[in-house]
Image 1 (cartoon, rainbow, N blue to C red):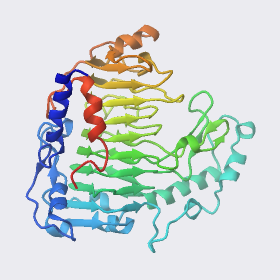
Image 2: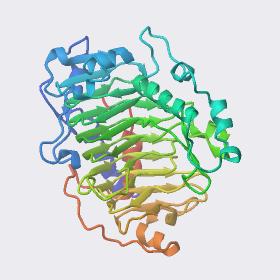
Image 3: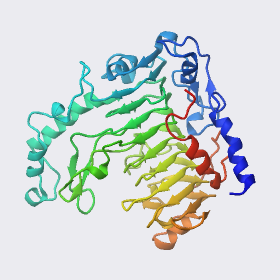
Image 4: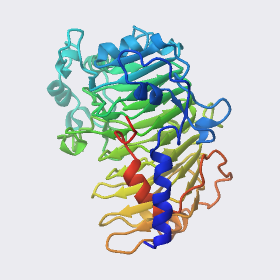
Length: 452
């Protein structure tokens, strides 16, 4: 890399590393619950002005105005539920400004007595996987959706798990992790929870104990799971920053095969659906996962129109397979992300869905063996995508600029158009040239890189 280019990248690092240089801080107040003053101050930081769609209008402040008694240090599932309002069933409606600082590992399968519950503890008495596999084997049942008492028992089992592992978050909340903080085996559910900040957490293994067999999903059917790691629904002004998303030591690649299809126990990392909008996801690291980010969950033209506005910048997509993101309807700004892609099971990076309008600028794609530039887009019923300033480094080749739309159109029909019909205005900083992206993103993306 030329010295001038490298120097520009290094000059950008101090701005991104210094507390308060990249984010605005409210008055820190008391540390609360034994937090250091530095941790309490960082936990009250707000989204910088202009930083993506979540900065539009009122911006995103999370729990920055929380009183000292609403600053909580949590170390367990029970602590987390209490800090969010006290009752997981109703916490989604708790709009009191609150700051929650996670210390250590919080496990969604933790019971009231502190022990860890197993999937068998959550199963309905009338459900078992061996019975399910025997009853709905396509050779016996056929290729039609499961019905009857056994499927009903699976649905009741899912309801049991939802009560246990889906943690409901209310509006005006900041959740930030201390170094090493991990949320495992759970879903953070932001449903009707506007003005929320989630930072510096590792999301690990949000597994589904009771996946559904969907024989009409694709030509040969698929197993589908229920739980995302972080789900944003019917919410606005959400900032997701400096987190790591992983399946840990339970990857989908290690799951068995049933009915000729992988037994899928994980869903998305960060899904934005059900009319949610004004979301900024920055400096996150997505590692070794299959389905990552679904923006818009239905092709039905209706309430999602003019919603689903999302900004993705300075994220690392590391050895991941699809939905990076998959977009329906929304104006989605995708810039300065590093795609480090590999694996025989890779499917696509950016899905161009119904009425989607993705603006893809100055990203850097590192491609493993067998992946080429024309593999990076997938047409899910969309018509156009704007792509500018992107670079690709194919396996064994030098880095070079790439026209993503032209590359796709050389091998696919029908062609995609090259103008999504809009230009982003919500950016806190000018986009870096694509060759600098691996330097900055590699150093800064993910949990445990904020100064805590």
